[in-house]
Structures are given as structure tokens and as C-alpha cells.
Image 1 (cartoon, helix red, strand yellow):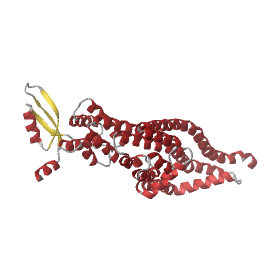
Image 2 (tube, helix red, strand yellow):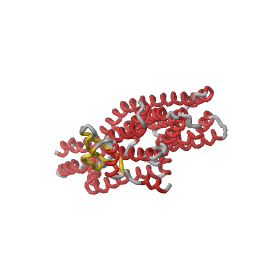
Image 3 (cartoon, one colour):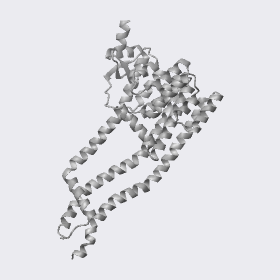
Image 4 (cartoon, one colour):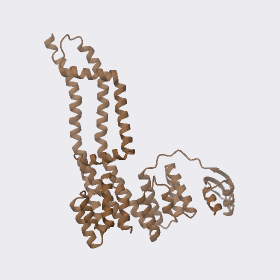
Length: 406
């Protein structure tokens, strides 16, 4: 037993090799092994005379994103449906991936599976990339013998979830980027342009208008403390984002606040409902019991308000309350979702009805993002016009009064 355990813990390396087969034809390839001797022995058993063996250099890879996992899941599902063996599918996907970090992750998982570990157990060793929902669905697929089918459903679920996230980010990114650009432009004007006007106005010999004096005072503050302004704003944003990411209390406050925002709050709320219903539909369709499926649903919604509500729903369902009643008590879900859930419970097709609800709210998110894009353009133009135009007008007011001085 100790020998088997120690053998599994030996680190394997990917070797690139070249050689000649029995017919003298030049061949090359890659192989995972503990050392060069193992590669040579394996190649000789295959009838290949090795002429060159070297370790493959691993390039520094980018970080692994959920989109990378979604693409890998789709590729793995497609290959398994085509009849490609699991280990060979991992090899093909790993070699074809442009991100060395993903390739290394897949090689590590493949090594675990090769030593007899189940695929779901191998995924559970990397909770940073494969959450409970992912692992539970893979485990259900392995137990029922329909792994390729559940991988396909999982890939579809992840693709739809990532699409919603991308749309939300794009809707929020546009106004954020404009505000940042506007601040930089104003800072440049205050630091470099306004001082030049100040030297001109000093020769006028007349009192300057109040708007001009205010802009010049702000300019003097920018020139004297520009390092403090940029430091406080940059540092404040950084520490706020870190607190939002790491502090649970801050997360809960921000999640509640986001849902109450005008316009954007409705968009975020609909995206949470879409992800909630899509996740539960996927889990239920895979044969995961309802109470157990709710474990993964709350976190997948992406908002602590829905996560807390899901915990209460799970507690009520576990005591015999219907899913529709428990969802109604949460006071979060619109009547359409509740009605479709009730129909699903009565007809025994909860997964189908929740999937339809998810489709509806995903299309709602699409429409809102498209509407917001057209709505934000005139608002942003007015915003920039007021700020930049106000500065320009305030600096030209003394010039308009130049005739009075003369």
C-alpha cells in the first residue's frame, strides 16, 4: 500500500522525443514519464529507436479563467461523444490549448485519472477551478454512465452563464471607462491648461468672475496635490475592491446595494434569476436530488442575497414544503418564475420549466443590455458636455469681459 502511494506521488514530466520506427521512418511525439529511462524503455517496447529525448519547456501561462474551463468542458464533451477515450481526450485538449497553465492543469488531472482516481475526485483536488456544482454533475454522470451527456449539459450551462456575465460587464464597463477618461482629461486640463490661462488673466487688472475663480482654485489644488489626489483615488478604489472581494460583510452590503441601483439593479436582478433557474434546471435534469441541488444553486447566482434566500428555501424544502411555496416565502422571485415552477412541480418537469424561465430571463438581459447601450450614449454626452463645457465657459468669461476693462 505504501509503495502504491509513493508511486502516485512521484512527479511526472512531459518529454519530447524523436526516433525511428521499425521501418526506419522518422517519428516524434510527447510522453509523460518520471525520467528519460522510462521514456526509452516505453519507446523500445513500441518498436521505436529513440534518437533524441528532452524535457518539454513549460512557458509561463496566463491565469485560468472560467471561460477556459467552459471551453475545456465543451471540447471534452465533444470528444467523448465522438468515442475518444477519456485519457486520450485529455491529451488532445491539453496539447491544443494555447494557455500553458490550462495545459498543466489538464496534465495533472489526467495523471490522477490514470492512476485510478475517478474524474470527479480528480476535479475536486482543484476547487479553485471546479466548484461543487461542476464536481457533483460529473460525479452524477459517472455513477449513471452518462458522463458525456452531462458534460455536454455542463458545457452549455457554463457557456450561458459566462455569456450573461460578459453582457453585465460590458454594460457596466462603458460608463465606467467614460468616467475614468473624463477624470483624466479634467486632471490634465487642471494641471497644464488652466495655469496658462491664469498667467494671462493676471494682466487684466480686473476682478475675475466667480466660476473662473472656482476653476482656478481647483486647478491650484490639482497642481499642488496631484500626487495625493491620484494616490487617494487609486488606493481607495484598490482597497475597496479588495475588501469587496475578501470581506463577507462588505460583499453582502454591496450585493444588496447593487440590486437597489436604478436601471442597473434591475439588470443585475434579472441576471441573478437567470443564473439561479439555469443552475437548478441543470442540476435537476442530471438527477441530483432537489435538496442536494440547492447546495450549489445559491453560490452560482453570484449574489449573497440570493444565496441567503436559497439556504432558507433548502431548509423549508427539506422539511416537506414545496419548492414553489419556499420560493414564494423568499420574496425575491417574480410571479412568472413562481408560476412556471408550480406547473413544473405538478407535471413532474421542473427542470424543463425552470430551463424555459432561464431562457426568458437571459433574453431579457440581452434586451436590457442593448437598450442600456443606446440609453447611456446621450447621458454620457451630456455628462461630458457639462463638465468640459463648464470648464471652458468659466475660463472664457474673463475674455468676454475684456471690453469692459479696456
